[in-house]
Each structure stands twice: as structure tokens, then as C-alpha cells.
Length: 143
Image (cartoon, rainbow, N blue to C red):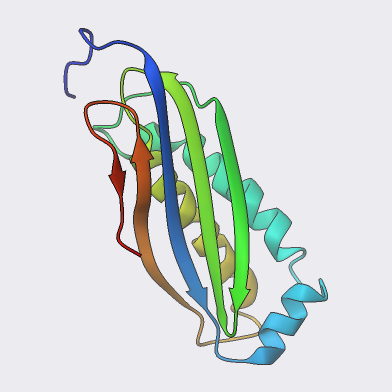
């Protein structure tokens, strides 16, 4: 693990995304109508994402355990794609980029698991960091 003992506590934020793509408008309708057999896709996936963010250092050995001060999960449906946007914030010595991307990944995996009985062609795409602030440098992806 990298030595961060000399670093100051500062506000750190990260925004990550993942995209879940389905093959049928019927799948989107089932999500919107809350008729997916395994339950409410958005609520269950948000809960999974929150756990994913908090459990990141348990699964990725070089990630520092850090206090997660805020996490938000948003969804945007565009045609057959569901864009997952996850924001993570902390005041700490190191950033939350990996936590945000891990959370977005877990949200997407949970959606896949819930939707696979309805749609065998579900795909997870474009897991990436969109923005980070705090620390030595800020970052914003070119959209």
C-alpha cells in the first residue's frame, strides 16, 4: 500500500459511470413498471452499489480503507441503455475514484443478475471515471 501518512485530509469526490444495455424495449418496460420477478431493479441495484463502494478495500488489496461520507446512485434510460452514475465523497488523505468505479460495477452486475431471466443479451459497458476532485490534481473526462 502507498504511504499516505504525510497527506492532509481534503475533500475528495469522484463521479463514475457504467452502462447496462438490454436487447428489448420489453426489458426497459419491465424495469419502469417494476415488474421484474427479482424485484425493483433500481432500488436493489442502488443498495448493492452502496455496499460495493463500502467494501472496495475488502476486495482490492491496495485500496486504503477510508470513511465514505456520501454516495449517490442515479440512473438515466436512453433507448435500450441504462446509464448508471455514481458519486462518492469523503474528506480524507486519498481519493475515492476506485470506490466510485467499483460501486458502478456492482450496480451494473446486480442489474445484470436481476435482468438475466428476462433478457439473455444484457451487456455491461463503459465502466469509467468521469470526474474527480481533490488531491494533487482534478480530472474530468472528455464527454
